[in-house]
Image 1: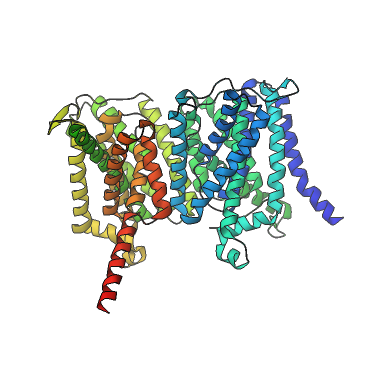
Image 2: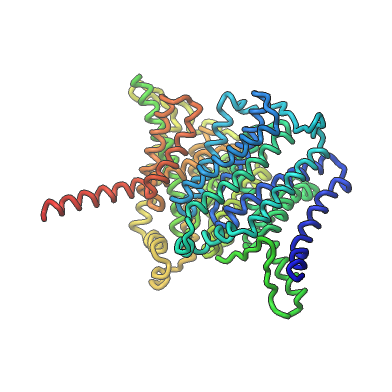
Length: 334
Length: 303
């Protein structure tokens, strides 16, 4: 019975959060906020994937924007130029994610920390340049008139409908992420960061673990990109810049590295905070950037882990430090 | 044909020197604080805006005093940034350090938009016009870039090798504990290094202003290619960075002859990825390997 109780304890917050996200459109029917809500959910999916690389395995990639963009372009080009059903186009998108994962995972085996960030920046710039300059990707104007997803003639063409479509995908990805967070993969990912030698001694192949992390992450990113393409129905290469990649990493750090809740919180903060700050007038972007920088410098372990710590202290009321064994929790040391 | 090749060579060498300056500028901070300054792109842009927007347009100064004032302003800004961000961050996690410098770049970018607006500025009658060299028409700004870069590199070499401050900087970059034991104030030395680095950033902004015009994205490409130059030469090594920059500039320009112009920017990054994967130490590593090989074969001959 005790096992069952702890399971409920762990599952309950996830349900509460999903309920909150699903009820969001009931309170804010404004199309503008719905669009940002959709974006926040897409960011959640990417952040959950990125967590495997940056959060758990501790490799700093700044090329996620390109992964997201390649997913979007794969699906958009297939459905506009070849008339492939967007649902069927998800298969090539998954293959694309798998390929990128293998391709980016390979340099991660050979190059060290900051150099790896440079390689991924180069990857992002190569992709953006090619998307901007190649003829069949629509050059700088991008791809227009992308068809929305549809089931039996029911088109997900309004903001509200796409909101629930993306929500369904988010649920699927959250389940996958939670399952992985409970599996041996997560432990292997964390060991790659903390002690690769010990991992090798235990008979686990470090390179295959790293490549697995990359493949998972880029599949998450590519699917989110495809959803974005069919939600926005118009994509340009100027969306998928290094700045986008940076904001994905910022999401993780704001929330707390390697932390499931941190990913969700970070994605929502990055999506909504600029909109809330808009009342400050022309300088809102500066305020946002300063806030983000301060958050990174002052809370290097993430806002979420600090909240968790103080809540844990309150609950235990001096009975000692909470075990912090939440879902996907990983305290980031140095 | 000969004229075209000469033209490409001159502009390639000029851009190569720009990349080399970028590489020098972040290598200085890398050596001193152990941080890779991902915000340097925005600082170059800021240098351009301070020079054109403030010194030339608002204060109406002549060219030379305007450049000097801009460089001094940026150096002071560099000391402030060093005290606030770079020096406190030098002991933090590498991941946090990278993101913090990236976010610093965003802050500077938004600040620049707020102060000078998001319009492109073009300095009038500054390094403009063309000159004839051996029958080839070359833009004067390229010639100036080459001359000024050589002067900067020479001055920097003089400072690092001959002056007390420069020797202290070199010492700090090699061993911080030993430096502080020798009575060098490590933090002051770091601040001076950052100030010099920001000054060089400003000069890059000034030099490239006539080519790219002063706008938000003016330095995105040169900043990233500066990283490529560093990797190709060998990271953390100043002479290697210069060599890497020159090679990159020339190769990239001549690649434009063979490949479609679409791939011009891609060449640099592809070259960088190849070097990262197969020659991670850059040209320095290759040189060391060859030297070792020669020494080995000589030893074998002797024995």
